[in-house]
Length: 116
Length: 107
Image (cartoon, one colour):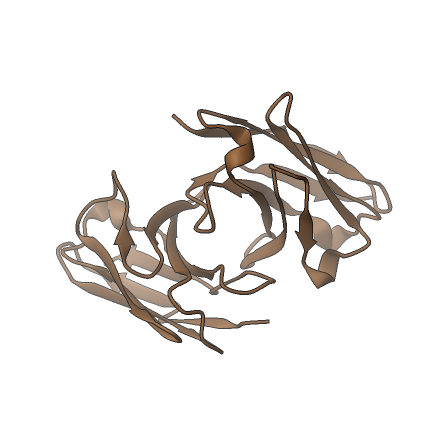
């Protein structure tokens, strides 16, 4: 069955960077794009962007342009999200999702805490 | 960006009750509107895609409808395990956006 397994909890200080991974299995990785979405405590979901696993094309939400990089490694069926210049309001659970434009499949989430 | 507004924000419900959740988009999203269920400390789970398409493994008491700007998620005969927060999500335009959520609680 399709699984998206994300890397573990991260604790970062303000100004640092974080890189979260999302390893896919159970389907041909290059078939679907990957989106990254975050959910801050008590807040709504926030779409951060999309990357094509086929050719690496990206589409970032304007809010994160310049601070985010999404990449994929097709040899390991893994997608990566890097977020730089972290602030306290970046504290959230970060999710990857895949499976077409309806995003049928979701990772388990990665908690990123930004605190001095 | 497209704003999705759900109604209600919160509803206290009894088992076997019929529940209707609405999602209104600030501009047309066609049928590119999907419904997710999220239980505490769990990832979102897709329930309905493209407004009305049901998914394998999702109980038949969940159904969706609508197009353009107005959409509904219906839960026929609510079960206790349906207590969760429900979100609509549009993938028609970038940036994709989500509704603010509708939290269901058992009375």
